[in-house]
Length: 115
Length: 111
Image (tube, rainbow over all chains, first blue to last red; front, side, top):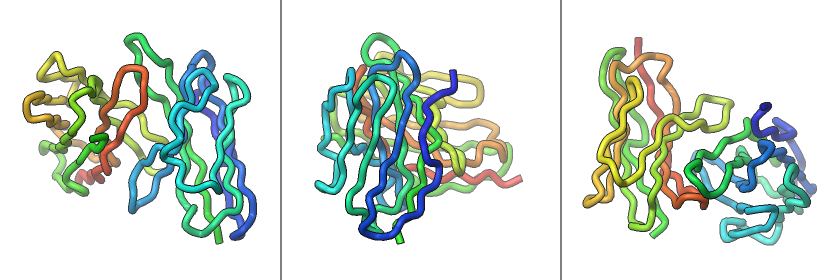
């Protein structure tokens, strides 16, 4: 298995532009998580999905952030318009919900820089 | 009640020494306590995890100690090696649900 795949690995954009981050979870996993990592705030959960349905989006900082999961193999996190304070590493993670296996597998992350 | 507090923020130990990282939680409903290891430029990866029905779990040089009454758990790295230098996160959660992460500890093991 290739693991959780995120793209792009790096993104540099100008303030005000739209940014779309992409994630392909591990095949068969039915929970997907988007995290943001910064030095100041550590790992923050933004939103998570179970079976493609958003369960908890209370971590989404503002209306500028939106996430979708149109099917079990793909999710996007969109920031529109982007701001310099959105600069961070964004991680996607997936796991098999329920049962005895609760390990979450993380992707390599997308380093976003908004200038 | 969802917070997980982790300390220290950074830790420097000599090769062969013992590294100890501590975490405390508030939500008594948490039933899963993993530790994740993160190397620069990589995503966090599960290192070891424990459930509240045991007080200790050991995997190689890594041990989790769990104190349910105090709502605390810790990671011990025995015979620390330079290759263990990384950021370590504790976390807590419910089976099948979200994880709440601690703030992270940057561990440096000097040769």
